[in-house]
Length: 430
Image 1 (tube, helix red, strand yellow):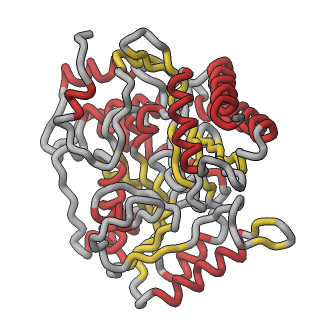
Image 2 (image 1 turned 90 degrees about the horizontal axis):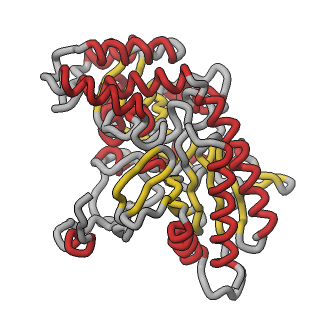
Image 3 (image 1 turned 180 degrees about the horizontal axis):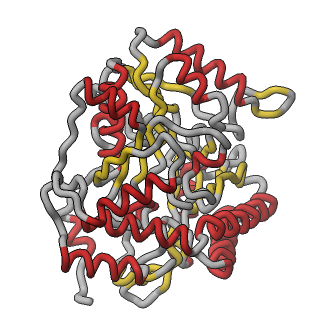
């Protein structure tokens, strides 16, 4: 591969609030990325949490080659076989009444479409989101995002209401020394019932709040409370869907729970820009009467649909939900051992399947804050051969986020845990 200069390129890249990585990646294959020095790095970010089956999975490569040689892009009113195959497969995999699919590009776009659909269906405009939520960067999606990027000084869409996110490790809602979600849940609804102007349209949630610090949401009673108030419940599974959390869809962890609208994106596209909104006949019918309209350039694209269909096929055929659950349990056990070893610095470990987090805390009088520690751990881990990311916890500490491909092996989990152990020893024990 031709040599290139990141510093020179950075002079021509618009700054967007993110720091450019110094690593020059020349190849990505399976669970690893490779830099220009030939160094192998375990990818525990799955790209942007999207490379569900690892990088350059041979069947994904083949389907892209085949599809781009056949039909690459068409007018969005033209339905090709890949689109038909994908929507039919989703209808088979999902429980009723989820059977109507809109194929889009990104998570943000799916959130925008879902919010507009809910507003059209209900004729109302208020949207509830969790205080540690992350739903994207476009107008409606960022308005429903409370975990970060909110202090822009710019107006959000009207009608945005915040509901407390579950945070067992640091929550003030304790009963007999144990976190009490039920109490916080009731408190949250009391806040909503006082804030609303009587126009509640939607409540959007993530089953596991990834960008908010790997917080698992207990969904019990949520659907019932939404139905009581006539609210459309939107479940955003951008990062948790398609096997990531140990089941094909994370909402299936709770028996009998079915959202009104399901959103899939990152994991469904396996590295290409694909998203899906799935809902019921009832909501489609109601929104038609309100003239719901959505039409974008790459809606129903055959190329990305072919990848999504193949991704679902591979996950189902190869038992990758089970692999995610088993390797996730292995990773979780390893993180618990690290918590025991570095107890003064590791406050909590949590997650489900292969979406795991390790929360760092700072000792009184320590030279570094938890935020500084997180940045230092991620930097050192990368130097040691492990790519991971850090996100803020609700208490504004640092959570090391570990999200490997669901094709990962037991040996690769062990390798990552060893690197993380060496990294923590170097950064924390001083």
